[in-house]
Image (tube, rainbow, N blue to C red; front, side, top):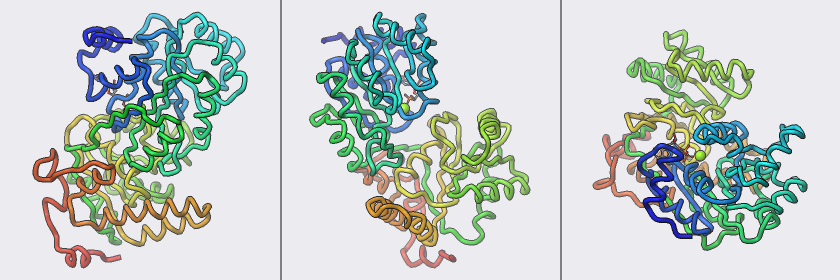
Length: 421
Ligand code: ADP
Ligand code: MG
């Protein structure tokens, strides 16, 4: 199918109200419309959803979107319904639907009304769903958060493993689109292999976040005092402090409160009501700081988070990148401060010791990269981008001087003297 550029732009305007494509979106949409297997690697916030939503809306048939989180699927379906007069244009197919609802979804698909069908991978494996989807017109399959298919990713999901087989059963010439914000070459290889899309047209956006300032400080026993000082210097600004354990989250949130900082805790052990209340307080700016485990952040879109502090170093560079990536979404200032002590690495290694050997090996390799990042004296931005397979030149690249190593070069022995623990 050949579509004129002006048609793409008018479709973009018609469905989304945007006058311009962001980054590589237009090229991706073209690739999908021409029925090619397509692989999209773009950082979070890059606008991946539109890459498959627009071609789905423009074509005949139903696009199947596989996504791991029910909450995110619901958000997207609501958003798509909001831009169309037809409620049936997007549906979620999952186990929570009753018989009548399932009947309605199937009717809308059969009648060509539904352009986007969101499914969790575990629903897609159900025999009755496979049988049904085989019998209808599918425009393409989009696998969002495709890194979930790789054990090297930060969010491996076993349910993603069988996707290739299931897709083949639904139809053998369905274009497959994989999308992820994970840029490591290993994960990318896994995605291509496990989805069976060798030769896919690949679009990779730069992962550079030039407005973020990266800093690593040695972690001493005064870390809490240091964090309090940092937050007070940034009074009134929104920030997230990540800790490894729920216990530490609770303790630190309290310490901050006692010191006059408007802070709330957030972790998966809190009941749903407190979690959503704390999250709202942060979004509404009733509080400035969320002290959280990694449970906080997926799908949170607060554009003006001004700092992300890692009280404990994360278990991979990818996690670090994702978590710091929540700062400065609006393009404004974003300070990323991580505290590092080798002791924490040993702790993380110990956590893994009960796991299967293969997992331990992966975990260990990922951690060694974190150690190298924390201890490096080269530009941190250069380090991160290199990890993601991107060469970065500090002299000419955007944000080239936005980290502690570049601004305040240290000799190696000085850096080591600072470490008290
Ligand atoms: P990702 O999935 O890559 O993290 P999203 O698809 O959630 O990113 O999009 C991030 C934000 O960018 C959304 O608020 C979306 O509305 C916005 N966006 C996407 N494409 C465009 C565009 N062409 N023009 C303006 N805003 C856009
Ligand atoms: Mg997304």
